[in-house]
Amino acid sequence: MATKCEPDPIVPDQNKIYGSYELNFNESENKTSAKAIFYLNPPSTTNQQKLELNHPANVTYNGDQLIFNINGRYYFKSFVGAVENQFVYTNFDDFTFTNGATIPDSIDLIITSDTISQQANYYFQIEGDNFLANEFIDVTVTSLSSDFTFGSTFDSLSVMTIEVSAQQLQELGSGKAVIKVTRRLENPDIIQVTPAGGNLSTQYSVQDTVFIY
Image (cartoon, rainbow, N blue to C red; front, side, top):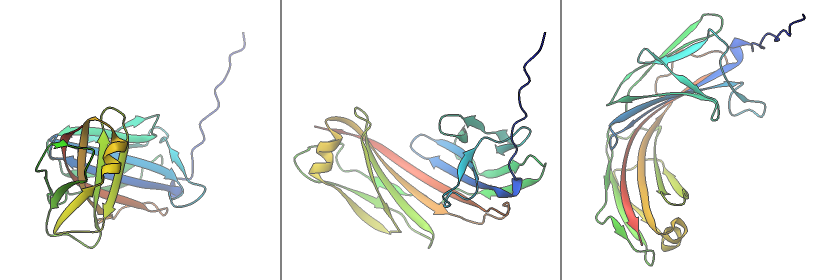
């Protein structure tokens, strides 16, 4: 009886794999998340595509192997507490690329009222210091009932007041919403990459829940 043979998987040129690493510490949840995405060709190019690594290639953080998410096509693992360690990517040819990741300085989210009317603009404050030239602040507000999200990105700040317009509040709808602020440092000291390149984003997040009526 004839048996059907599965074709061998195609192994891409290992020098064309671009590694994108992200480390996020969420103070409000006391959780560190490590994420890695591998691209065939850099993500800025028109012919890039996200890859699942060919066995035995793998990526670890803090010595633990990151798990591939088939829907988002990324590798991910979370840890309790603030965990600073190294991403270690071992490719199909058994070459290893190691990059340390340090959580940025903290940022504060100051909310004076957690109950918000849709009929007026809403304001909250962000505070932080020691900002670097390649740091950014990401602000998102997400409705827990509709999953509607809007966000903004700022270059840097010392003290900043953020405005959420009445129109944006109405688009979010009534119910609970999460305000999340992330301090993001791009490409800090990424050293070991393939010829295709790579990037490292380290982040510090804080969030709070409000009620919109």
